[in-house]
Amino acid sequence: MKLGVIILQVLIIHVFLFLGAAMKAVLPLPIPASMFGLCLLFLALYLKIIKLEWVEKGANWLMAELLLFFIPSAVGIVNYDEIISIQGAEIVILIGISTIIVVGMTAFIAEKMTKGKGSEQP
Amino acid sequence: MMILFTAITYLVYRFAKKVYSKWGLPFFHPLLIVPIVLILIISITHVSANQYLEATKWLSHMLGPATVAFAVPIYRHLTTIKKYLGTIIISITSGTLVAIFSTFGLSKLLHLKYDFVTSILPRSITTPIAIEVSKEIGGLPALTTVFVILTGVIGGVVGPTVLKWLSIRTPIAKGLALGMAAHGAGTNKALDYGEQAATFSSLAMIFAAMITLIWGVLLIPPLMHFHHIF
Image 1 (tube, rainbow over the protein chains, first blue to last red):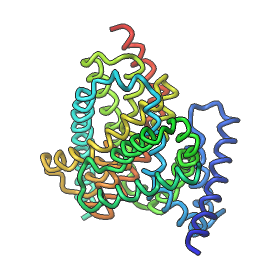
Image 2: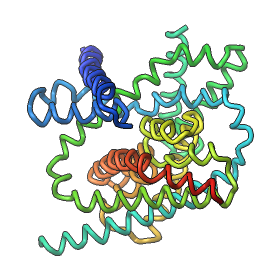
Image 3: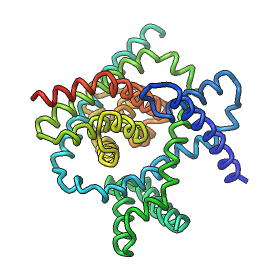
Image 4: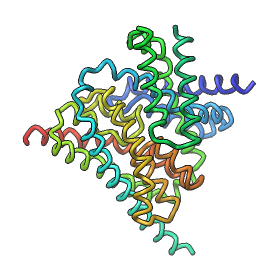
């Protein structure tokens, strides 16, 4: 029962989300509960408190269907009148230019650093 | 209602995903075409957006566990992360800074309203965290979602071209750049360059989200203060 395994593992991952929410309630940091949950799950795996096989299938499913979970919020934009006042074409150009700079800068730095690393360890 | 709307959402999503992965047409990006089709469906059938949102609330809720799930690839690739930690941290920190400053500068040029600027600043990171950063700095989460989605679609189109212009060779650099600039959509694109590129792309996405959370506290508030002065 593949679906059953996925559901069960997603429930285990939920436990870490709830633990993360509990941490958020205690710690006065502007960090989302899910980020605390991520760190807790990582620690649990690292310290071998839980086995990778217990969460791996559920995690893979959640990550593979990530786009599906965004769809309701994307539909929700019809509730915002502000959307109408967006200068659509200008925003697209803004994002386009900024994205070109970000891709270029990140790739350039990473390429320089990995090449340096390659020559150190032939 | 819940089952009906979830089923419709899922079917439209599956169809778009299939078409997108087969032909790669940017317009068929699931995050673009699926909401448009669903908005059409609910307006034709006179269902209010709130009814739809109420029924599919649990899908949005899954963004929480989906974020937690990224602990699994981090754990799986721990040795790679350790080996390239310096490269990842330096390139992604620069990437997040460039993303925030260039977006801020261009928003000023376009004279965007205050809450538009706060909503667009976290646009290059993954939606669940972008929404948190947006709330933190006074943006509108729904608007942020739109900007994040647009970034993903645009990044998938311009990213590979930029990598070609700069003749970037290593899959590590390709992956980091795509994950940094275009979150999950970039990671999806990075698969074209192989598994190593995809791994680094998902790592870039996670690190970009974490680092941007820090900027949301330290850097963006003074920057928005500056917005008021000008």
